Length: 64
Image: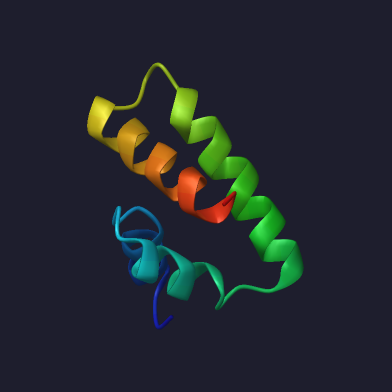
């Protein structure tokens, strides 16, 4: 990924291929950190519903 914004655009795209492509650019440590963050996002009450839904979609792909 060229930028952090592109990484998160891919991870939260709700498109399985883009999610996996973005995730697979990360190191093992980065993957753990990002996965933890996405898990928090999925249930964060302060986030917009669409952001939570995107996080949940990413989790579904990454935990499959």
